[in-house]
Length: 560
Image: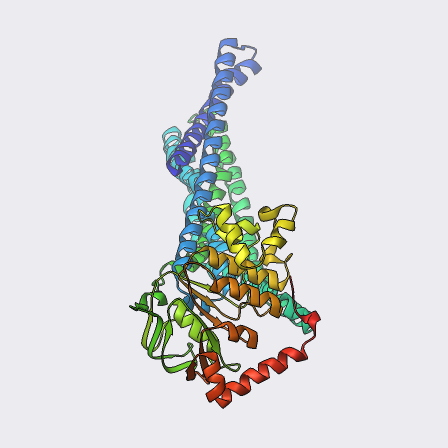
C-alpha cells in the first residue's frame, strides 16, 4: 500500500513538471501569436487538451497518494496497537503492578498514533524528491542561469529543516511524555471517582490534572512557536526567489536566451514547487513527534516478557488438592513476608475455608494457589492446572451478561444458565426483559454489589475448573443467599476443590477443612469443629465474626 502511495506521488511529481512545459507551449504558441493577431486554433486545441489531460492525471496521482497513504498510516497504527496490546496481555500480574495502567493504555493509543503520524505526508515527501530531481534537470537544461537561481533555494531549505529538527525534537518528546502522564492521571481519577467524591477531593484532583495539563500545554506551545517561526520563513523565502526569477528572466529574454513562454514556465513551475517544498518541512516536523511516540512504544515492546507465576506451580498426586512446602512470599518493595514459611495440605474435592484476622495473608495465600504471584521460596503444588479465581472486587466488562460469563468461549446457553443457577442468579436474569443479552454498563454499574459478585462467580463456574479459589467472594451477600451459593458449589458434580476466604461463621461451618492464618503464618488447620474445640485464638476470631455480623443492620446486606 505504501508503494502504491509513493507511485501515485511520483505521477503527481512528473505531471507537475509536465504542466509547466504545457504552460510554456500555451504562452509561446497560443497566447503570444493570438495577441499578435495570428491565432492558431490547432495549437489552442492541442495545448488545452494537454493541460487538461496533465491536470486529470495529476489529480489521479493525488487521490491515489492520499488514499493509500492514509490506509498505510492507520493500518500501521492498528499493527502497533495490537503489538503493544499483545505484549501487555502476555505480561504477568507482577508486571502490571509495577506499571501505571493509564500510561500503558496511552502506549497502545495516542503513542501508536503519534509514531505513525509521519507516514501520511511521507509519500508526498518522496514525490518532492522526484519533483526536485525532474524539475532541476528540466530547469538547468532549459537555462543554466535561471536553473541555478531556482535551485539555489533548496540547500537553504534543507539547512533550515535541519536546524528546526534539532530545535523542536526535545519539545515534542516532552509533550508526548506529558500526554502519557495526563492519560494516566485521567484514568486514575475516573477509576477512583467514588473515592474522590467520598472524601471531597474534587478540588485536589482538579488541581492535579490542571498542573499536568499546563505542563503538556507549555511543551506543545513551545514546539508550535518554533514551528510557526519556521513556516513563516518558509513562506517568505520562495516568494523572494520568485521575484528574483522574474528579474533574471526579463534580462535573459532581452538577451535572447529565453522566450517569454519559457520564463512563464519557470515561474509557474517554481510557484508549484512552493507547496511541495513546504511538505519537506512538514515531514521533518512530524519526525520528532513520531520518534517520541515510537520510543515510548519501543519501551514497552523491548521489555522482556516475564515468566508467569503459574509456571512455578507443580502438580500433586493422590487425594491432595493443594500442597504448600515451606512457602514464603513478600510483595515487591516490602521487607515483610505476606506469607511466611507455610506448609500444609488441602484435601482434593473438598471445601476449605481460609480464616484469619485482617492482614493475616489470606488473599496472598489464595494468589499463590491460583498462580497469580510467585513464591520467594518453597514449593506450591496443585492437583490441576485448571484453576479459576474469583476476587473480592468483581470486575465486569461493559457488555452483556452473556459476554461477561462466556468471555467469548464456546459455551452453550444451557451451560451459562447452569452457572447462573449455582450462583443463585438465574431467577434475577430471567426477570430481565433482555435476559442474558442485557447490557450491564461500565463495570456492571447497573447491578448491585452482590449481583456483580455472583456474575463473576458464574463466570468462574462456567470455566469448569477443578480448583476454584474465592477471595471473600460472597462478602456482599446476605447469609441466606451466601449459604445457598456455597451449598450449590459443594453439590457440583464432579466435586471441585474449593478454597474460600470466609468471614462469616455460617460460611466457615459449611467448609470441611479450615486453615487458620495470622501474621502471614499458619497457626492451625483441620475440621471446623476441631479448631473450635482446641484453638482459643480461632474460637475468639469466630466469635468476633458473629458479633460483627449481628452489629450490622439488614439494610447493609444485599439480598439481590
